[in-house]
Image (cartoon, rainbow, N blue to C red):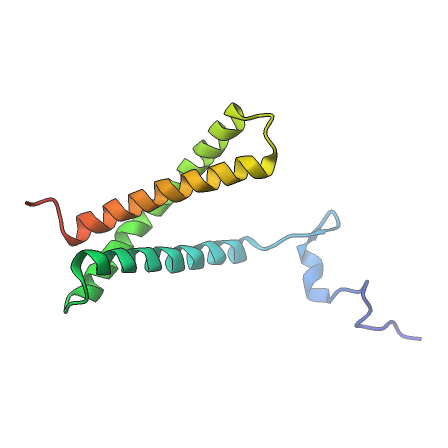
Length: 131
């Protein structure tokens, strides 16, 4: 009798290359595409709202928004580096705290830091520093 191709323990042939040591590994390309998508969605929403709050909906709204989003793309890698530093700092200062609490503190701090950086970037691009 031939093996059932839909049996729970069988795997399609094309996923066998993703197995290393019995665990399924996600290809790097998928991880990069997910990060770029999340950066675009979150950065686009935040800079869009901040641009609208700063200059309103005008003829130059989409131009201002695109400039702010490009500036946010330049700032987001700095946020990734900061996240590593904040995580190390929190883990060093709170070694006996449960992991989910440390992650929660890290997440809240990073949200405040990144939102402040995006707000500064958007405001400086849309209204500038002139009086």
